[in-house]
View (cartoon, rainbow, N blue to C red):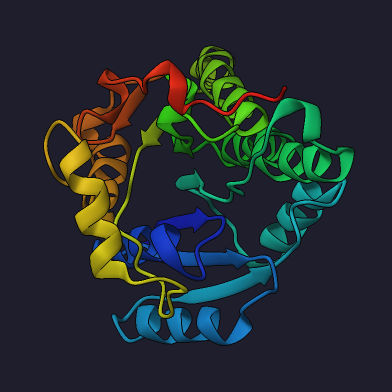
Length: 262
């Protein structure tokens, strides 16, 4: 019996890596993707996944560039004959006051966080339809889609809101082919990168008391939800966005904490 395939963008490290390992443990062959910034880290991830007895290949593409999503899926089609799970995990977190935002940052964020997402989902849907696979597509957004957090994230939050709305459109259009599309919107996730430019323990101690549940989201719980949405238990769920943030989006910051330009 042909083994099923899971393809995750932005999976050479971080949260994408955790989800890739989870689906490998479930017996899926894994296609990793990274932007090219850390090939050594992606190779370590590939080796770890391959050690679990499944096939794992790595594709490289800078999704900030125009046409990158289409090129990425051309590479995928050259390597794989099926696609059962696609997770759009790639994203850039950046921001600043509206009146100080330049087009370079704006275009980079739009390119990765929405344009690449839109066309990767489109390509994944086309591939599943062609192969007659009733697959699952999951977008990783952010709880910024719901709340105006302080810090000047107008572009980032707007794009995450667009991802949530796009999830509903894709779910409706793809439903004819029994392809489900859902979205996970995390809040603060415990960073799991190999190197941190800050004191991780102090960071967690600073953030967790501010959350209603007093805990950041472990990456394993993101993988739990991705697994559930792709499983038979989630077969009646489509077009939905689930916030996973320890209750963070239930709050809002006081007015004086927002960044305003005089």
